[in-house]
Image (cartoon, rainbow, N blue to C red; front, side, top):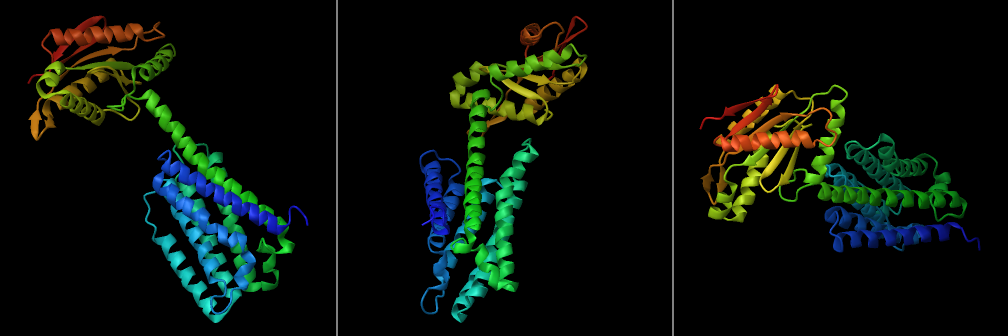
Length: 397
């Protein structure tokens, strides 16, 4: 027997589906990754196996069933795959289209089984599964990550699209050229090439879906490395990288500024209300600051209650206005603790990024000095460096 006959190839495809079901269950239960999508995809791979192991049985079932169990298993696999891909791509889209296609197909296949028509049952199955994978390819294209290269997105969607086209072509043969339909049935001896193609597409889909999860896992790890776990602001290391990037642009004529921020009397909040209240105060501070930031601005936590805001392409005068707005917003918005409002203010030091300072140390030192100048003058205010002079601007209570 040929080692690569259609029976062997479809059996290998079934084994790959079983392996992928185990992979997704492992990702869900051992690593807690994409639990909802993972369960749906694991179920899809399990449901594909019976049809792959007994494709030719579709026409051999006795009595009125006429292959309906295998057809339903196949349809269930494509349905779960469509729902799993949509969940994996994090699309806020209802599943009515998937469920409607599946329900209509199930009724059509059942009716064909009752009438004893294998041809029309396979037509309904092929058409519906082709449409479901067409939806998968659309969802992959729609749910691609921002900034992801277009060719990567196209590669992820391509196996779904090709599988959809094959299934729709199979539906066309059952509708108009039933004598050629065996070419699209991987168990038929004449379709070894098609069996190879289905095997390849199965591998590509499996690798593509796992790569989506792995990419997100790597992104999550990178996020944890670069972010403060409490406030989600940049940590000191990541902030330093961003500051050095801006400092490098100063030599090319760009203007950038930064604002050093420190919560007033933060120790008193911790001592009087507890550290949980201190954490809530920091989260409130960050929320107020972000409400007054642009998307390109970067907020970093340098330690304790001290934060620094990077303002790219911002003059010192504009940075002063940003700090003034933040200071006033923080004063107007106390944070809630145990259903009681707690007043909180902060002091601000505003400085322009300095030339000939590749590491940003001089700029940070100036902003830090300005910050403590604001604190020494009574807190709840900003201090700005302008043309070598210091202007203290108090925010009146």
